[in-house]
Length: 370
Length: 198
Image 1 (cartoon, each protein chain N blue to C red):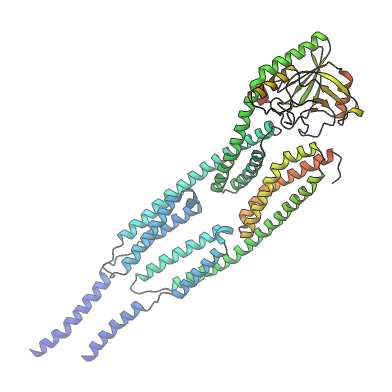
Image 2 (image 1 turned 90 degrees about the vertical axis):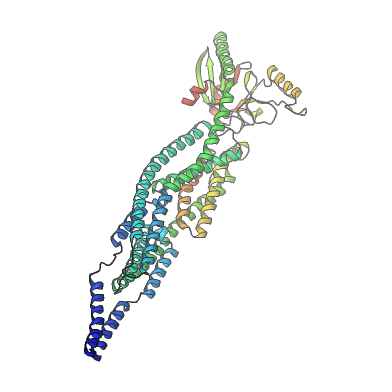
């Protein structure tokens, strides 16, 4: 009996050991989803290369969070006994990470190509706006602040274009937004101002037609100064004979109101005096009869209304003179032409020759096309 | 009998030893992480973004491999150690290359900044030579906005350069250079028209 027990005592542990070994060898050990993790990483990496972190930030971050969660669950399962592990959650999160990264990748691709086109369109549109500002308003009186803003906008636009060129669409977009805030309001302000100015066009046309008719009737010379195009048109017998370039007062938009406002007046005038070189600082000059009766009446009305102080002076000494050709509006309100043009003009006009100064010979639509 | 029991115990002990023989290569992990952090400090993410992203991918894969080995009964970190070593070497190379690239960008930005400063200085020198009187004042008035904008952009670029953000500084300088040059040409044209020597 004693011997039997002895055998049982030996065989039982051996049996248990063999059974244990068999269990270890043959029981299916739960395997971690290594392949799924590799795949998730690969998709996340691809999404990252497509800049999903920038162009599909939320989805990309979600995918990374899912991957991190998968890793956390994996580590947590590793702490458990080898046979009691369950990698289901790891697998789920890995697959979720891969799906979200794939979505982020597609999203980023779409957003990138959309941004690429959208920004290019905006750059083109803003360049047109800037071109319009330079073409139509380069000589338009604007505040210093607005001029500074336009210049800043132009530099920023170049920066945005450079960013766009190297594929930095998000950065380009941020700059474009800033440029839009600067250039568009400047353009709109100038445009609205110009439209308001051109409301006087019917009056200008009437004056111009009347001046040309006067030239035809009198069989003589008449002059029309077109402030917007900065041209001096010389008519003879109602036909355009000569065209000169003109430079005006700095604040040439609108009528002259008061002495020292650096505005070029608008109205129908006549040459009241001719000055040779010895009588003027500006080579030769043709003095106009500014202010005429209408100018004085308007000035008085403005004083009466309180729009101008009682101490205001109407001003005068508006001339067509030489020393022009500087490329800017530099006079105090006069019209400057080159000395050569002044010579030819001086020869053909006389005291009494009509000089009509208007905002534009052409209506706004025509001006905008030009 | 006694021997058989001892043999059994020895076998169990061997299994236990084998199961715990692979130690996590913490020193190598820390060294590789430090090398990657050094690459980031060297702004590899700015100057060599693709290479830096590859480094991060590589480390992420190693972390997964470590977790995989951690979960095994018989741990063997040999492959992990090898991967860590190659990633560390790669990180060091990326750090060095980023420094070279950063230096290149710095030199380019510095050169352009000096060029634009020279143009800005020339513009400032030419301004007083513009025709005196109201006509000169009118020209100055016309280009004042541009001058202010260029000055502001150069100042911004200088500030970015001083902060060490050379790439951003470079873009700003390039954008302002065109404007500064066109202003220079404009001023010179006015001076030439007015027959003033410059």
